[in-house]
Amino acid sequence: MGTIAISGCATGIGAATRKRFEADGHRVIGIDLRDVEVVADLSTPEGRGRAIDETLQACGGRLDGAVLCAGLGGHIGENATVASVNYFGVAELLDGLFPALQRGEEPSAVVMCSNSAQLVPNAIDTPLVQAMLARDEPESRRVAEEECSGQLVYMLSKNAVGTDVRRRALAWGDAGVRINALAPGPIETPLLQGGLDTPGIGDAIREFKVPVGRWGRPEEIAEVVAFLMGPHGGFVHGSIWYVDGGADALTRSDRF
Ligand code: NAD
Image 1 (cartoon, protein in one colour):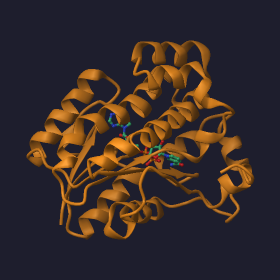
Image 2 (image 1 turned 30 degrees about the vertical axis):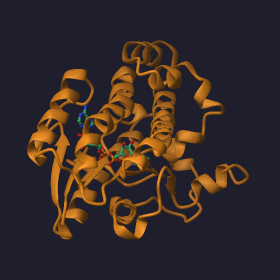
Image 3 (image 1 turned 30 degrees about the horizontal axis):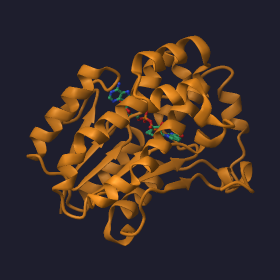
Image 4 (image 1 turned 90 degrees about the vertical axis):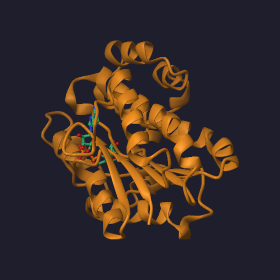
């Protein structure tokens, strides 16, 4: 049994992941805007600082796992907030929780990316991904507001998150902490529903072909998180797992 911090676990994938780990007897420290142990707003530097401090306090400086699920859809009409939560709410928490993970037992982290992260050609060269990876939050927020659509901010923030995870592979591996990203396709959660309810975006989601013929359930993502975090996933490190009913295979058959 271990102690696992989960961000974004008030609803959706994070809530299903919490339930999955608690069923196995783990202790979960939830980080979210409401209904959790650590109430914090990950869209601001102050909120992220509080999230890290209070999580470290709650776990006594020792964590066996971290699952970072907090995220916002591109449909919400607040591009700067999406950039801050989706990228800085991940990267800064990974940095802040890393010392506690190093003291954990067979420690591991999983971050929610998205199968849309690879839909923008040469995403790594875009001003938004460059600003994010440079950890320049004011510039990231400016580019997100002034130069991008909401959906583009979402996809690029997830691209930056995936790159951030992969760039940690050597240092985290040396420290004995595994880290992976999971790239879901459409999963039936409040985030997906928000997109479906937004004119101009809902139809695009409905038309997005998923080879298995349905959308996923949060519990199906939680199962893969549990595998990646557990002993059977012990050699999986620095990788991005597409759990999307085959949608990535359909759109990028020849690129992997
Ligand atoms: P969700 O909306 O059900 O859950 C997101 C959680 O993040 C919520 O509990 C919310 O309160 C929390 N959150 C949002 N802003 C926050 C803030 N400022 N501070 C703290 N917490 C905040 O969505 P979900 O579908 O479960 O998404 C979980 C993750 O999976 C997200 O990162 C999302 O981008 C990713 N994802 C989801 C889908 C999908 O189709 N549902 C697909 C690909 C990736």
